[in-house]
Amino acid sequence: MPASAAEVHEMKKAPAVDGVLPTILHRWSPRAFTGRAVSAKDLKTIFEAVRWAPSSFNEQPWRFLVGTHGSETYRKIHDALMPFNQMWAGKAPVLMLGVAKTKFSHNGDPNRVALFDLGAASTVLALQASAMGLAAHQMAGFDEDAARKAFAVPDEYIFGSAIALGYQGDPANLPHEQMLKQEVAPRTRKHLGEFVWKGWEKAAELA
Ligand SMILES: Cc1cc2nc3c(=O)[nH]c(=O)nc-3n(C[C@H](O)[C@H](O)[C@H](O)COP(=O)(O)O)c2cc1C
Image 1 (tube, rainbow, N blue to C red):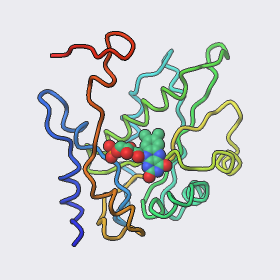
Image 2: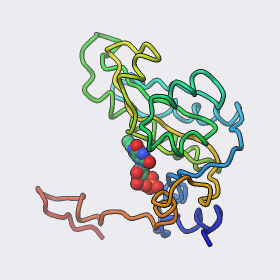
Image 3: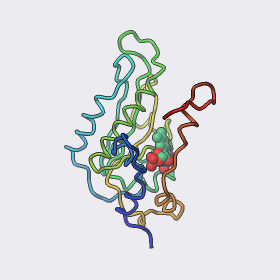
């Protein structure tokens, strides 16, 4: 019998690490969502948190197209998703699309870190959502050309991820066996030595 939503959520939590914020350890990306709507108030709170993400020159190049289930914005984002993502993300009550302005507003120069700043903002979004008992699942799997056309996004904006937001649901409702398997699989990560280096490919000695 598949595990319940609560059991899966518990199992997905990264093991406690002394000094690491629980919100960071407990955030994960579900594909199963309940039908429960996200209140306008909670959505606003999430974006109040996003406002305070850091960015180069404080440009805040991120823009989020936000659609709630049943809206035209939601339908356009859903239509642009790859079929695999459409299969599960259409149950999420909120779909978003993150885009970033690639030119600085103060002088028009190219902003080579615009996407980086959008990523930072998206991480703040996911962490704030998780701290509120919600879950965000980012997706690179969408058709950028279709999304650009649907929303008439100007050329100077670059696409980041689409994001499904909602309340984590029962994995048994996922539309396909492979998805269910991934939903109940433990989360894994690289070891520190694989990405904290004192020289090229030389692990830094940490405590
Ligand atoms: C930029 C980005 C793109 C992603 N694209 C997809 C996607 O298209 N479809 C999907 O199901 N998951 C997608 N994911 C989710 C990742 O697979 C997931 O974050 C990763 O496996 C780590 O799992 P966790 O977020 O539960 O810790 C994406 C995540 C990120 C950050």
